[in-house]
Each structure stands twice: as C-alpha cells, then as structure tokens.
Image 1 (spheres, rainbow, N blue to C red):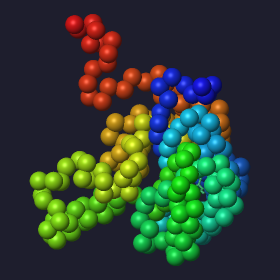
Image 2: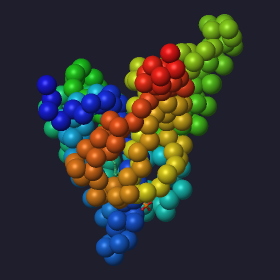
Image 3: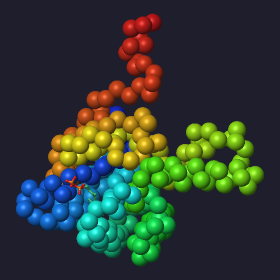
Length: 247
Ligand code: FPP
C-alpha cells in the first residue's frame, strides 16, 4: 500500500497555478522570475502527485486569454514551456509519465506544436501518472470546437440529432477519455475558475490555497489532498449517513 495515499484519494487533480507574478513582485523581481520559479514547482507537483497515487494531474499552463499579456511575458512563457519539455521530457518518460495536451493546437507556434506532439508521441505507451498540460486552453473555446464537430457530423449525415447527449459532448472535448477532475486546486487565494474545465468540473471539489504557485511545495499539495479527503461528495444526492437517519 502507498503510505501517503489519503483516504478518499482523488483520481484526477487539476491545478490553476496562480500567483507567479505576485511572487516575483514581492521580491522586486521581473514577472518572468516568478514563472521560472513556477516551473520548478511543476516538476515537484508531478512527482508528489505520482507518489500520492493520483492517476491524472492537469496543469493550467497557458490560457487562451493569456495572449493578452504583454508581448514580452507571452514570449517568456513560451520559452519556459520549450525549456520544460526539452529539459524534462526524457526524465518524465523515464518515470513512466504519460503526457497529454489539451487546448487549441492550431493557433500556436509550429515549433511549440511540434514539441507538444513529440511529448505526447514519446510517452503515449507509458502507464504511470498522466500529466495533462492545458496549453492555449480555454473551456469555452473547447466547447465551441466540440459543438462545431457535432454540427459537422450532423450536416454530413454521420450523426443523428437525437444522438447528441452528454456522452457525445464528452467524447468531443479535448479531455475525451480522461475522467473528470475530482479536485480542482487554485493557488494564490483567488477563488474563480477562469475558463478552466467548465464542463469537466461540474462535480469537482475546489480547494483554494492562499500560497502563491512558486510556494506550492509538496507539503502544501498534501494539505490540499487532506482537505479533499475530508469532503463529502454527494453528486446531487444525499450522503450515506443522512440516508441512514431518514430510513
Ligand atoms: C499565473 O500566474 C500563472 C501563469 C499564467 C502561467 C503558469 C505557468 C507556469 C507555472 C510555467 C510554465 C508551465 C509549464 C507546465 C512548463 P500569474 O502570472 O497570473 O500571477 P499573478 O496573478 O500573481 O500576476
């Protein structure tokens, strides 16, 4: 048995890694320094999640709205993603991590697209934790792309309107085949979803951590998992003890 697996361990954890800029500002450093420190926490988070027995870890690395940041910051973030894949891919592969990427791949730089494709191709057969990188990802954009696919299938006579149900949508969004997140963590004290996994997080538990992402260490991650372990998930029904009292 894994000693660190808490009772009620989540199968899929998704993280909004927020607060890099504030971390850097507080130290009188440029924002990029915060993102750089954030990348180191990414490595640690993947390892902690794997050790905790989590099957899927989704990280919000770059949103479809992040293009509105100053050009220099966007370019620094792209550079950091390149750096992360080039430096860490071999090690992640060795550690049996399977990488998947969600988000719109069409509108990103060709070299980054190639790197992301390479990361997926190389690690496809791995059987350890799945690291889902949300890159150029926006949940509304994802739903729009899924609706288009369905409309095209109906138009081409390949799909009946009556066949459009929740499963049909789930099969056409970027996370097709990946279970919904049990737990969504957001760091930096902000308490919002920011266009992340709107469909998938319908029944997720949320844990908002006050610490900034570059301070989100192994202990903070384990605290969030412990908090999840104390939650009672009812999915719109009633909990087992309440059922017993009512019977
Ligand atoms: C939010 O902090 C963080 C981001 C926009 C990007 C997160 C990216 C990384 C941790 C590095 C790259 C990721 C990978 C997977 C290699 P913020 O800039 O919004 O912080 P602020 O709210 O304090 O300004």
